[in-house]
Image 1: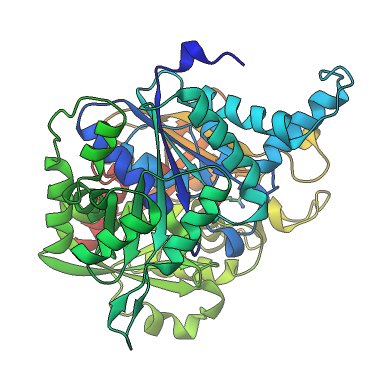
Image 2: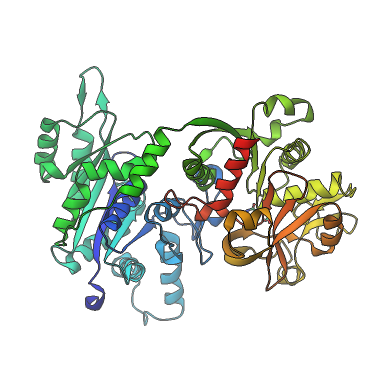
Length: 539
Ligand code: GLN
């Protein structure tokens, strides 16, 4: 392979050792933010060793949130971290799974592209991985490549072998390897232990990879003797043993890693200049998050409330919105299946804003609609996202417009003509497949109605937001709803689809068919979330 022309990009590979969930993603994202703050153009990608072709069909219970990119890829939630930290949009190319790799190698084999040769992990799978890494990094000065899983996992081996080959193709000075490990503190000995790190570095070396940096997750500070000892055993320099303590807020991690000089040392090892870092924005974010002026309680009424990871972007978007509002958010997750009209007052006591997030399936919808009704009738700020918007429309149909059999097509059989499907498949979708139709995925434009809440919050009339849903508002109900006080304030004009609904006689009742949380960033909080929190503070 000849990669020469693309080799202008410098590479930072990130692996993880000892245990999973050590925060590789956060390290990658934070380092990306730091390098960007020094003026470099940075991209980040994730290679996941599992065999699913994409995480779209994986249960949120197992895998956390599905993050959607502008181009409509359903990706791992780490891509959300990356976008939030580096502030640029990523694409399908930045989320690679072993499933995709094998899928494309096997389909090439079926087409005869390997001319009858034996198709093997090395070089066919590894070449496919290398090509994808190179493709995703094009046009950037620095590409950060996170390898999912933990070193030692069987399924991660082809990815690590591809990294080994790439590093040698790239030649010295053009790539670095950062190994993120866990350093336990043993109370009885009163000591941090480096042995697990040593073993995981040994494992890396066995497959031909020598890390340049060790990012050590630990509860206690790393002292000089720990750094020296670990450096000696792992063949790195003591200053490249980087401390990564648990942070009060994740947005402090870039500043912490900067204090440890990770970004400066990384640039030096990549033979790049070290221009000054502009960290003003990050410092402001952290100061605001740590010194809020007051507090407000917001309820998230959903199905996966036990697993906060499945609402990751949503949670972060709320945190971002708390920054300009200078408020601490007490976010109360309420399981919609626990909601009954009797318990409502108790469950939502002292709640100043109610948010119903996206979701799928009929489970728990009645509870969500009871919460929406409560917000509507008691004039509590309400923010409905995707399913939350659809349910707000159904609740309105039932309790305001008097359509008692209002439902979503999602809950009834395709040929059930008795039900009033306020939320339905659009005609083109019905022809598409027998079951369900296709999903609307990725960015779509939306025209806002002048002087609506949405228009006031966005301060623009044309916006673009990301989608991930199958069903739409049924336009046959539009004029009836309008008569009863609903405002259709956002429309996707090309197909005349409803994107935003609002209520006239309510301080802040907004339902959106898209997922605004995917585009919120700490340095640029999303206007609708900012508006929702502002309204909640006034409630
Ligand atoms: N279940 C709904 C649909 O498919 C909403 C999806 C969502 O909230 N992401 O249209």
